[in-house]
Image (cartoon, rainbow, N blue to C red; front, side, top):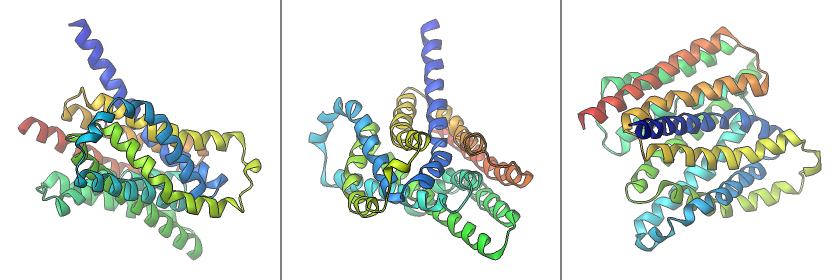
Length: 305
């Protein structure tokens, strides 16, 4: 009995840490994009991610023998949207908005994923899912309209938020396509393959931007952020989340979805030193209510299934 409780505690710890690590990607990406070109930072992210994931993926290499053409197509799509699209859009978007705005927009990921699942995969709509989507939209609009500022700043903020939201859509595609793959393939192997296959997509742009990039001018803190962005948010986060997910019920795992937006918001204040505003709390609270609704929906589906 004590052994089961210890295992359960370890599983919950991995799930919580995995979501917290994923949440750190938003403020860390702001640091990275402030210190180096977007495609240089993105190439470092996927390169380091693939390097760290390689030893974990090696143990599942035997699954490659049973890969079908459809499996390889799904992995390529994950590399294109989940790695290339997400990284580029996220970093370009975070150049234009604050870490707090980025964190709140990223918090819409569960609602966006639910909407995409209903549109493209025939997932049945429920009042909880629809309400969560409405809350996500309302929270982001509340935040954006409450920011104020002159016309140029406002237009740049809207564009930046739109790019981050596009990154959220790419993340949703990664989640849904990855879910299809993980039904018969180790998710860590999928993450490794997608990271490795996306490297050639980044390289031409990274080489082009490297010509005007002074690597010596990048401080130790920014290099540490770049390393964490790949080895931490991509690799460690993936391993922690999926190793916990393998031993947890879906309802338990869903309850930890709320850790990611909280982590992103708090770390935006701590790492970026951004000023707290009541409008931030209002926008985040609205979006977070949607996250909790989606967690409730996942728990309900797990019990009814």
